[in-house]
Image 1 (cartoon, rainbow, N blue to C red):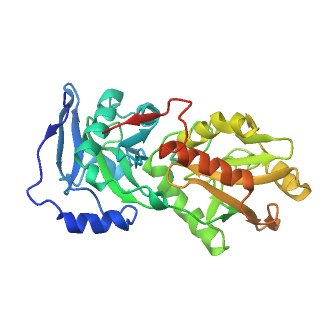
Image 2: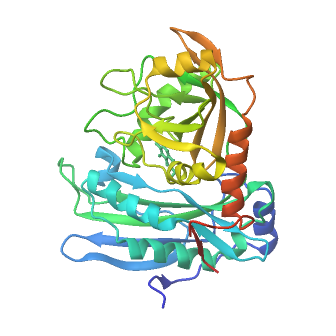
Image 3: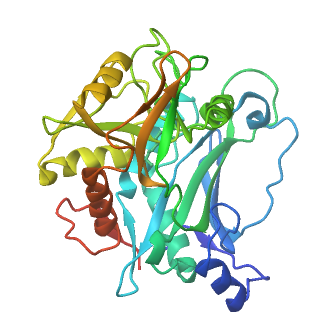
Length: 358
Ligand SMILES: *Cc1c(COP(=O)(O)O)cnc(C)c1O
């Protein structure tokens, strides 16, 4: 049974144009012909679930999202397997996180069943846009929600739009990076929105990202907002380190984003002879551990890049530091390959993570 009313576009992309995009995808630039949409009205709830042509929204200039930033989003991928079937990876985690992000921003939560139905129905319709798996290609899915009530008062809005976009994607951050330990910016504060996947967190991160780039670093490593001492995450990815004692250590949840990739790697750790540990990690522990060799490998993880090897750190106070021999670690590469193999159906799905779409 279909939950989303299907209204097909009258100007579909030609097969030739679509195949060209799918063969050589550019993340976030080309979108499938259709998107899923639903509306929320106070008193009426969610209604008009539909799949329509991907086209502009009409928004009143006073729409709350444009002024006070009530916006949340998700990110996950559809993977094509060798037998041409198409699969999602743990989409119910994204559905649940979308609800908790909504709650933190006082937005009407979009029901998890409707979220999952939107993925199922849009990906099934647009399956020709799911690339072949070579080069880690996939169809990236971007659920999001905005407040569209036209009202300038500061309170939660009464109307929302749910949307789901799909864009074919290749490998996202394939190269190893150095992290900039920013002395000037924090990403989240105790009691703030660090654990919510909201656009505002990303707007606030751009200055730090540009500061990192100016210092030759590909990503930022944020420290906590209260003491500026404890490792948090990279702003679009969670942070992990491997130790000489065979531990996989990552900052405990709290003001960081609870990543699906982070959780999955913690659950895969034992199969790689690693003990998963979630705890506070101080910047001094990181620095001393990298110097002494107690910390053998570091990496960042998230849906887009799966795992990005971290080969060094830079900060104004302590200068440049190299992890190990400055090359991606062997365990890092193994873990990355293992997770990709599960996602693309090449390794056994022992944890029951994959959901077949079509
Ligand atoms: C989305 C995101 C991550 C990674 O989460 P995944 O579920 O693994 O994709 C990490 N940090 C932030 C700030 C994020 O927004």
